[in-house]
Image 1 (tube, rainbow, N blue to C red):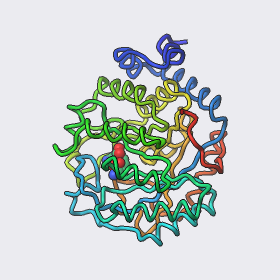
Image 2 (image 1 turned 180 degrees about the horizontal axis):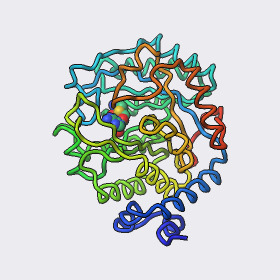
Image 3 (image 1 turned 90 degrees about the horizontal axis):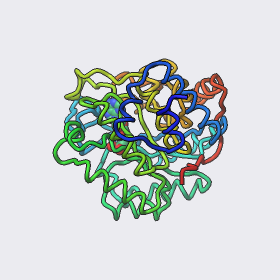
Image 4 (image 1 turned 90 degrees about the vertical axis):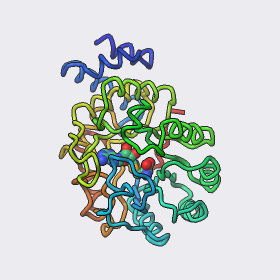
Amino acid sequence: MNKLIDKLRTAGSLSKSEFEELINCDKNTAEELRQTAEKLRIENYGHDIYIRGLIEFTNFCKQDCLYCGIRKSNLNCQRYRLSEDDIMECCREGYRLGFRTFVLQGGEDAFFNDDRLCSIIEKIKGEYPDCALTLSVGEKPYQSYKRFYDCGADRYLLRHETANAEHFAKLHPKSQTLESRKECLLALKEIGYQVGCGFMVGSPYQTVGTLAEDLLFIKELNPQMVGIGPFIHHNDTPFRDFPDGTLELTLKLLSIIRVMLPKVLLPATTALATIDPIGREKGILAGANVVMPNLSPVSVRKKYQLYENKVCTGEESAQCKGCLEARIRSVGCRIAVNRGDSMNI
Ligand code: SAH
């Protein structure tokens, strides 16, 4: 076995320069890495793939992340908000289809203040006490995170985006800092959430060095989930001319994360499915064990465009579920009908 893969598997981490070497490895080593990751996924989670029903409930956002299609400066973005009834209807359909985790994701929208969000959280948890509820609504004060948790939210996704402060500053306006992002992640952990961090692969100004720093940061945070997917340019952002992240590098990083944190929950993301027709399947074969199909009403799906050409925006939730089921079967796995909590505790 390759020495670096073996060390990562047995020691659980590598030095920064060793991570860089592994990220730069040749095709043969990459295949060995993939096989190691797939084996670890099966050892820890069997052939179960967890599904999360993603409800993109608002695309209003006060932030101006340079990569993101729903940034506030994008005047071409048609803004929408789902009502509480719309959201409950998504959950009803999702529950019927076998979803036992709902993810409320959106821009940082002041309309959904703490009172409104708490009311939605309580309603969902009241009607579906056997389901997990995940929030993904960006940076908030500690007290807000605490209120959402006390109302019943179980998990929180907040990608760190990059663990290198200079790189973070190139991806965001001055008002956002890596320091405050890290504080949010630590607060979420302390409160008791199952936490997900993550980053885009191939984001502008990313280097092998910053990727190695991402891996070291993830190891240190030891989250329950890690969301990674390729950067995909959006024509209405300042990053319109930057190249998209590659399939090859995304798969390699998925495998490295699976080997480093064998029990972590690792989604094969929609962005990965967008850059390759069988991106999700390849993600699962590289060690991923979660997929997050869309439960949002078809009428708003095309408006939640973080990047160009996002897939699965035209089909009803039931069609998506059927399509996913077949794709997951094609790689020897099955959809699990349960909450799918992380074993990385
Ligand atoms: N506003 C919330 C959730 C929505 S953004 C938040 O900021 O957490 C969810 C993730 O989509 C971001 O963390 C980012 O990593 C990813 N994303 C945004 N723009 C993207 C793009 N152009 N290509 C690929 N991923 C993107």
